[in-house]
Image (tube, rainbow, N blue to C red; front, side):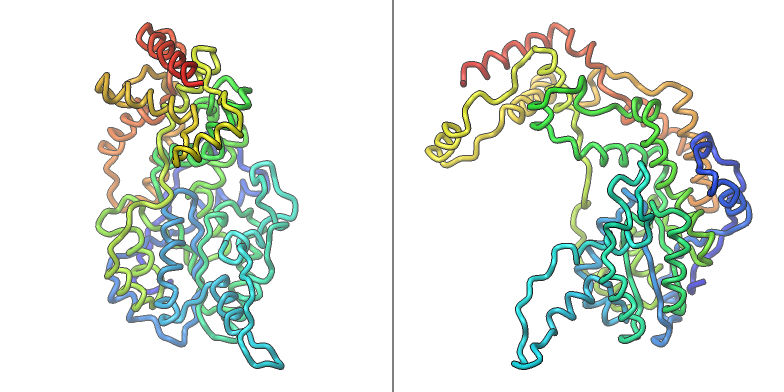
Length: 455
């Protein structure tokens, strides 16, 4: 175990209903893991932790996410802090490849070669994909060994064997790796580095599930959906995903911290879990100062940086959903009427970028709700999750909190926060109620007339 990381006993609570869908080859092993292993929790004292690591010790640190737990922030700052990480003896495979390319010499002319760096080199996902199955499951979509870039694996080997350095890789796709892939990762790492640390982050399930759901919906492009006009709703509701989408249910079960950590505990002794909700320090400081062995210079540099705003945040799509529903029901025609040539000429004449009708309607709805009516996006009529689904989410949330949330679980405060989610973030727009309201019927009639007048 790395210095200054405390161990806490794993909770022996039985898995909730979500775990009923465990694949057979995982079920028995995961059960024993839940009852017989411990989880390391990132500790507080950076000075004690960092000074105990010796330069001769080669560490491999694999940050597995999961998704929506500040993984993008850690990856972004690992890029910014690469020189400090190098001072602390850490290299990342993609940075190693870039360095080798920049130092490449022409054998005859003895001068630097100007080569274009492939775009995939900065994507750590292609390292993680080397430990996926050759044929993707329906849950993994495009995540399979077909996307593996072996150059990154070879770069990792060179980091250890030629440079005698430690390894750092951060990719949330690791949380989606099957048990067999975890075993392959163990074989790859244990043969090259003295100490291996698997790092995960814990975010409360009821909060994480909303963030994960919102992330999945980013692929739905508003303008494209308007043009296609094929679905009743712009986005499938959270209720629909939880009740009817078996792939979504398998995803959240497999990728969430509870299941992901359990799989890695099967092959790795040191699995460290950072508490996303511990506000005594940022998760970035916890990662670079508490978890990463011997990262003294990196920690010092991080503390001197003014932190930027949250990275890869989600935004509400309430107004897009309402605009799409009104268009779908014929209350307003959002489709563009100008042909491409005349639209381009108009933009050139006015030297401005013309907003799409879809964007204009979305902004008009927002203005009407928030400025004219002095309300918020949460004040629309909504339909919320039924009790059986709420009970499942709460059960998993409580199980995870007892396992990863620290020694003292404030169940009462946590339940109050959960109840707020059950009335807001878990709820979908009641489109029938909104679009039958005389207020919104009149609004969309007026907006439609404005659009037609502009054509």
